[in-house]
Image (cartoon, rainbow, N blue to C red; front, side, top):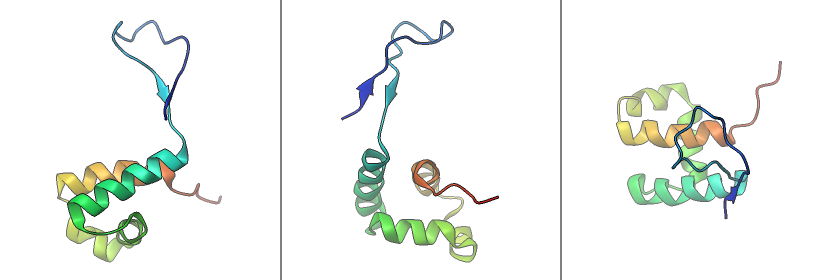
Length: 80
């Protein structure tokens, strides 16, 4: 479950609630939505997301793009 963080930046509206989510919660959401929308697991979605040749096929799909944001959140940091 997401936890509420005390305090918020002054520029946010009063109704804004800042929450922190775990990597596991993001993974569960990605898995749930990928299964519902594309009939694939989170692992399968990430394989598509990480392959540029396959990604190009889905790149214009707004639904795929929204799930891509979740994938960005759980992606392993790039090694520099």
